[in-house]
Image 1 (cartoon, rainbow, N blue to C red):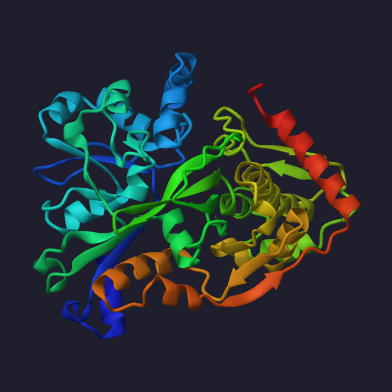
Image 2: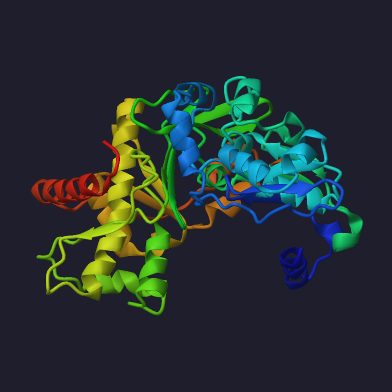
Length: 441
């Protein structure tokens, strides 16, 4: 509310001048709140939280992962919302009974915001957020009773699932001085896919924020990954679902934050690129940033971060370089898996966005290690842009999908310049480092 009021004030407009609100959010962060008061019953459990790792391992050992993957396109990992919901119901006193009595509501951050903005009149979410809960059948487009029973989640907790562009409710007039409709909702990676105008099958975007998430549009076809990627809903518009393959890297920009705040090697994140550029090229230092486990295609919740190849000559520059390179190596792992699943990956150009892509050094290394072009758009905040397009198009004040796609503008294309032998050697070193870090077989 503070942010919205500040935006209105700085734009010198009032709430009546606003066509609609759009919401985008970190998808798997989980809340349960009291329907009467709107207050959460416990701290939000963020998407990176690993407290349900043992539960996920037990469900896998009991043979439940195949059913979950078939219905949801996801794998059993603490990353997703469903096991977080179960943890809250099992660990907050009285929560399960109150949930079964219909007194509580579950949602990801979008649902919670909408509930609060509408004064509790709307308990809703969109298909992209619902699809990340381990509770939603992405083929049938509905909550799944078998999965609800498996995770012991009462149906009374759940929000109504809507298209990404829909009538999600209106804000209470007292908040901003007038009612404002909420017309667009998408999880952050899906909003970025839309903001990058990746509307055609085969188009691929990768967002570099705290983590890194690559989505490949597969159209109306739900491609079942054979390489430990996720099958997910890219977006749902007009009742039609578009699917994607997704690879999730848990630590990307967070490794740069660690360099800055944990090791204190730099004062500002922007210094890591120049520092990496000054590193000794003869040293091959690898950082495997498994600070909260490894995501796709490894899915090792118990792995932890490690640095390999250190010598007495290694210093801040070599460690900074290893942190930036790790993001690129992990992206390559995702794209190799996508190429195997999709079969047409060689035709794909990667569109990138997020804070890290401002670094020319990092983007050039990414193109080199992928041996593929990397396109950086003029607008890097594509997550917000995607939510804005969903909302504006629903409100009738922004262009249709085709016209919006034409407005996408290239800032710079990075093309590979590394020789094949060097690339092969570097990738082999990375593969060896990951193998040494994994705790699973």
